[in-house]
Image (cartoon, rainbow, N blue to C red; front, side, top):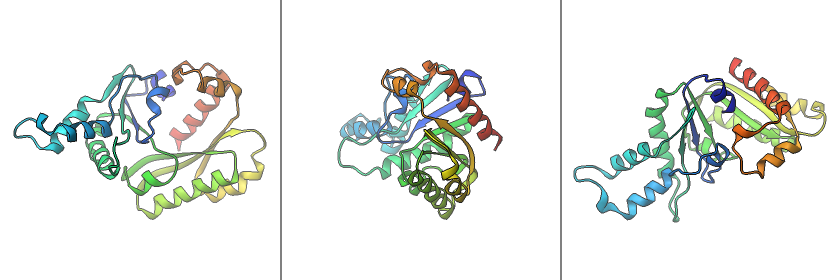
Length: 228
């Protein structure tokens, strides 16, 4: 995100598809609505739906109005339902809306929840570049392998698969066999850095992060991702 925005590579849509929405705070966005919140609101106030308009169309209109427009990027947040409702409806709304909205942007970045749930729900039926970030462990890299395999089994069209190992505190050699077994292109490792931990508790957006060494490493990784 930082690289795309700072270098003005094109129009950017960021989508937080994690029910536990944290991307807005990371991007410095404080005032936003969620798709789940809009669905809850409309369901509680059915009398507010204009005459002649279906509930589905009204919700879609509200979601489009809730699209946050920031300097350098737009943002859409899924959120979670207030009650015991299923996420399926919200995911379907997000998928259907994306199918129409993404063509208006040069880049669409989707932050999914950790794990396989969003992959299984096929929030996206086609992905240009699938990037997975593993921690510095055998379990993490093997989990990435399972996700890559699930994507293939579900028939989701993927242009390229890429893997990054994060918070590296030692040599990568012990993980090389596991990394190769994923079948993905390994595009880099990010070393553990105390400055990242300090930034994570500062409540500042990623655009304010100033560690040039880490930023340089991430820039190199991003360039490899774009080339792959």
